[in-house]
Amino acid sequence: KAGVTQTPRYLIKTRGQQVTLSCSPISGHRSVSWYQQTPGQGLQFLFEYFSETQRNKGNFPGRFSGRQFSNSRSEMNVSTLELGDSALYLCASRIGTGRGEDYGYTFGSGTRLTVV
Amino acid sequence: KNEVEQSPQNLTAQEGEFITINCSYSVGISALHWLQQHPGGGIVSLFMLSSGKKKHGRLIATINIQEKHSSLHITASHPRDSAVYICAARVAETSGSRLTFGEGTQLTVNP
Image 1 (cartoon, chains in turn orange, green):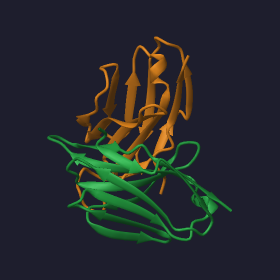
Image 2 (cartoon, rainbow over the protein chains, first blue to last red):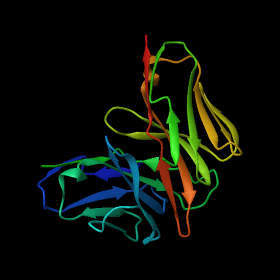
Image 3 (cartoon, each protein chain N blue to C red):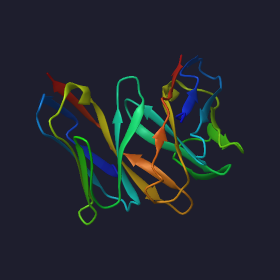
């Protein structure tokens, strides 16, 4: 079956612009979470969505937002881009939000955002 | 102090060696994940553990809930095992959950 698809793979934006990244989860997966990876901070949790509702949010400024659609696809948006937003943005999908063996994460390949 | 600490940060081994990567966490968890990241960024989930031990091929992961410690072992290491290995703790919160990550271990296996 198809994996988690993130688009675009690479993106270059200018400071002050905004950007929207997309994540299509594995078919049947209803939970999508987003992460930022930078050389200095490593991997950090951004958001978790389940059934179109944001379930949890990491410690990021309000410029970072997201949403999930009825087909479980998710988007994240960063407004007023700063140089420090340059990072690899990863999303992961899960079948749901339970704790059992079926609730592991499948990651996408990421979107590499460069802010200049 | 980070919620998840990994050691070592860097590890170089010769092909065939037995490798151990350690992970300690300071938070209550619902599961502990071991992830593998190759150059280019893609992350593969290797194991999800809530207790005991799991084995997949040459990889073995163990967890001690009382000591809040997990280890990833690679037996008969191979150059294709070269990657960054990341320990991640899934923390259940009031609504939803989050993954909190270790800094990763860069493993290089030389032929």
